[in-house]
Amino acid sequence: MKLYQCPECGKQLGSTSSLYSHHLRYHSVETLHVCCVCSKKCVANSELITHMRVHSGERPFKCSVCSRAFSQNSACERHMRKHIGKKPYACEFCNKTFSRLDNLKTHSETHNR
Image (cartoon, rainbow, N blue to C red):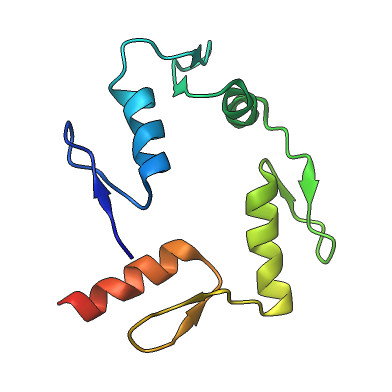
């Protein structure tokens, strides 16, 4: 997996679109949406709405198996993979599979040592 490094702070991101969003959020003078509670900068209004759930405690997405609630649909979907055993992310070096991309990234680092 190719990583893209931010030239301003060195953070490594997984795609050019992530790098672009990172740049807008942390390095651009003209950030579009700012949280009125904690001043977090968001690229899109939808991202700000999702972020505001941190402050409100709202968790509108519920697991259909165990009813655990989440503030983001993506987190709920990721959680539900545990119930069904779905592991869509495979290591290109050893074919071990993972349910979460961040776990695959951490695992992949063991091959780069």
